[in-house]
Amino acid sequence: MQKEPTFENALSFAQDLIRIPSLSGEEGEVAKRILLEMEALGYDETHIDEVGNVIGTVRGGQGGPPVMLNCHMDVVAEGDSGAWDHSPFAAEVAGGFLHGRGAMDIKGPLALQTYAAASLRGSAPGDVVVAHTVFEERAGWGMEHLMASGRVKAVAVVIGEATGGDIATGHRGRGELEVILQGVAGHASAPERARNALDLVPPVLKSLAELATRQGEDPVLGEASLVATQLDVSPESRNVIPDRVVVVVDWRVLPGSTYDELEDQIRMALRPNLRDLPEGMAVEVRTAREWQETYTGIAELRSLFTPGFLMDAGDPLVVAAARAVGRRKEDGPAKIRPWTFATDGGWSCGVFGVPTLGFAPGEERFAHTNRERLDLEEARWAFARHSELILALQKTLG
Image 1 (cartoon, helix red, strand yellow):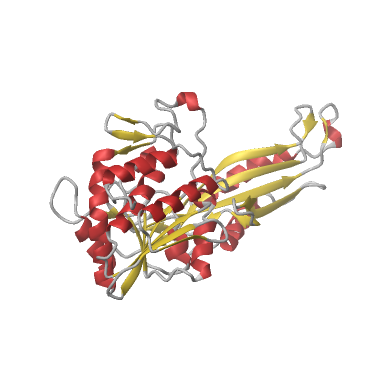
Image 2 (image 1 turned 60 degrees about the horizontal axis):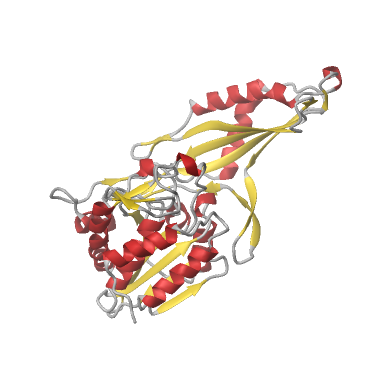
C-alpha cells in the first residue's frame, strides 16, 4: 500500500532516520531506509549511485524543467551523550520540537523534501529529482560526484540546510589547510641534539594572524576569515622533543577561491617571519587531505575544501522563490540572505554552475550542538510551502 505524503508520516520518517547513526562514510543504513521510503511513496525511479547517493525521481507530466531537492545523509558525531537534554538518537518529540542528532542538520528537512516531492506526483509540470548525498560534512564528495556524473539534469537545486524559512542564496567556502613544521627529534634530556619543531609555532601563528587582517570582503557574504584551530604534535611522548608539528588552519573563503591560491597566500605570509630556518628544519604548506571511503567501498585521498557561491538576490529564480515561500508570521516575500556555514551548494552552483538556493526550517545556531532540535510548527509550515516553491521554480525556468 502506497504511503500518503502527509506531514505526520514525514515526521515519523524523520524519527526513523535520527535513530540510525550515520557519520560520513557510514550512511549505508540510512540510505537503505530512504530508498524504501521513496518506493513506499510511489517514486517513479529510485537508485543508489557508485558513491552511495540516494536518487529518486517523481515524474512531471508537462515537459517542464526538472528541479532537484537535496539534503545530505551524514551527520557529525554526537559527542558526550550525557551532555544532551534529550538522547541524541532517541528522536524524541517534546516541547514542540523534534530532538536529536540530525533533527535539523539535516534528517528532519530530508524527510520533508522526500515527502514534498511525493506530494507533487502527477501535478508538477517537470520532474522533481530528490538526491540525498554522502560526505557533505567532510567537503561534499557526494554532491561533487553527482554533479560531475551528469546523470542528474536538474536546472535548479534546492538545498535543505536550515534557513529558518528564509531563502538562502550562498555562503563562504571552507578551506582546511595545514602548515607542517619539520625538525629533528631527540630525547628531552639532551635538547642540544634536537631541532624542536615547536620553536616554529610562534612565528607561524604570528604570520597567520597578520594574514587574517588582510582578507577580502563581499558586501553580502562579509569578510573572509582564517584562524589556527589545532596543533598536532609527533611524537606524542612527553619526554621526546617533537620533530613534526602540524598547524591546522580553518579558512572561510569567498567564492572563486581555490586551494592553490590559498596555499600560496600562506607561503607568502610565512616568509617575513621564517627567513632563516636552522639546519634540519623545514616548513611545508598544503591543503588538508584525508583518506575517505564510501559505504559502497570506493576510496580516495580527498582534499578538505568546499567552494563558496552566491546567487544574485535579484535573480528571477530567487525572487520567485521568495514570493512563493512567503513568511510564516507576516505578509510579504521571504527574507533573502546567505548561510553562515558551508553547504553542498558550493559544488552544485559554485563549481558546476547550476542555480542553487536554500529553504528549510531550523535555526543555524543549533547545528552541530548537543541542543539540536527542529521546531515542529515551523517544520509543518515549511512542508506546506515546498510544493509552492517547486512549482514557482519550474514556472520561472520554463
